[in-house]
Length: 87
Image (tube, rainbow, N blue to C red; front, side):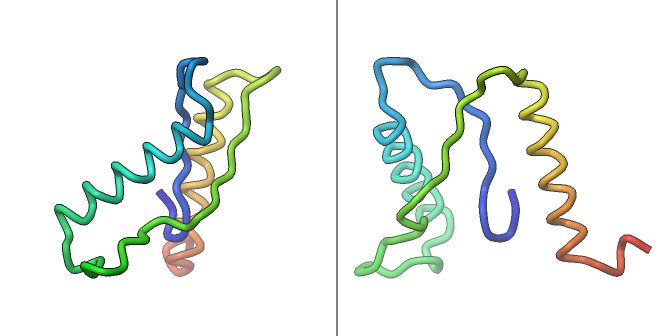
C-alpha cells in the first residue's frame, strides 16, 4: 500500500471480466473499511475509491518479477514519505 494508491497482484478466473472483478473488489473492500472505520464516510456519500483503475496483464514476465516491482514501489513510497529516514 502506498499513501495514494494500492498495488495488487491477482489472478481472476476467465469467466469474470476485469471490470466485474474490480467493481466487486472496490465495492466489498469499501464496505469492509466503512464497517471498521465509520468515521471515514458519511451516510450519504459512500464513494471511498476513485472511479478509475489501472490494470496490466502479465505476458513475458514472471509473477515473481511483478511481486518484486510491487515491493520496490512500496519501499520507494515509504522513502518519499519520510525523506530523513534514508540518511
